[in-house]
Image (cartoon, rainbow over all chains, first blue to last red; front, side):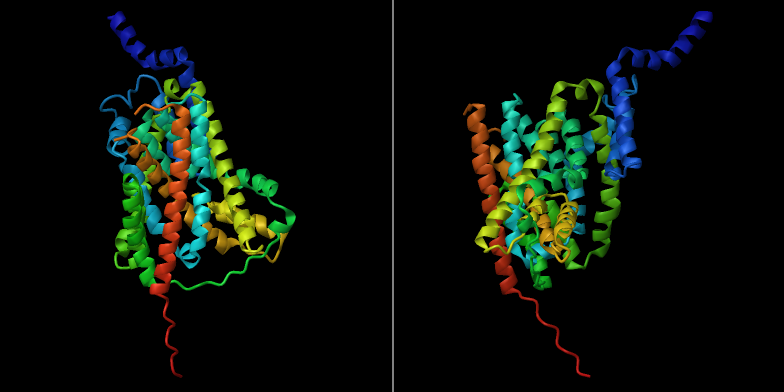
Length: 382
Length: 48
């Protein structure tokens, strides 16, 4: 009788024993706590860091088997991440939220969105140098898209074992854009360049153009890079719904209810990939460092490209707007405006930067799409 | 075809970045064309 009681009580302390024997779970519980702290107290991407942090805690409590077959997190993961459904649903919401008017009014800023993707490919090279496999390097490089859903889409497909590290790097650095970018902007530009005032004459864009834009981009992008059509098509579907104005219920659902529910599940799933055994490895630190490099390189290449445009335009372009050619929307544009006004109180770069930033959003998706199609062309993926 | 990492990385850099810039450039041209084909019509002034 006593033995049975002791065995029963033993079941209540088994979790503590397992935790005491696995230091990695303890460390990851602390990491989960730090993510929650950053989200709740520091307001650092809370919509993602709170579910990620909690998912991380859930999966590192021993003996729970939440990510084992039929575990509740595994069911959500298989349904939404393994199938690539969650990032695509989020993209529909992003498309529904984004006004591409500034980039349509000034299409040349689209090219800044291309320059802001250089970091992806340079980081891919560096990842290969550090010994990662080809598809792992592709997934690490995509952190440079500064675009969480794109990073998750590509990584879950081609290097799912890196999903936790890549997602955490992508979202953390996106939140740190206001800290990472300004020193690079100052280092690569002269005072004279930073003080340049760019005139903005708002060219009106017709509703027809705004509605044709998502359709044309979907078909054109799909023809050039068919492998990326799910990404491009979902963001453009959301944008078409927004601009058509006839499905406001669907638009609102996409940008609110659907995006919110999916963000919760996606965050939990990312956290769930952060088990101690999978996350606490030297390669995680390398991925975090490479992700940081990717965003620095994006910013630097965007600014250098804008400097080239400045030369070609006879000094009319303020190269600071090049830093907005990344996908972190509208944060990067705000950083550019803030930096610009610091050096010239009469300088209002926000609309130009919004154009570059919207270009960066499409640019990151196009870069991923092109990357996948080139990989397919080389026979590395099917 | 088996390829070494350097060849792979450089191919991705050239084709990937080149493809991205080319695609976005074509898209910017298409957007310019769309803007010209379907310009915003000025609203007729209301008579007082």
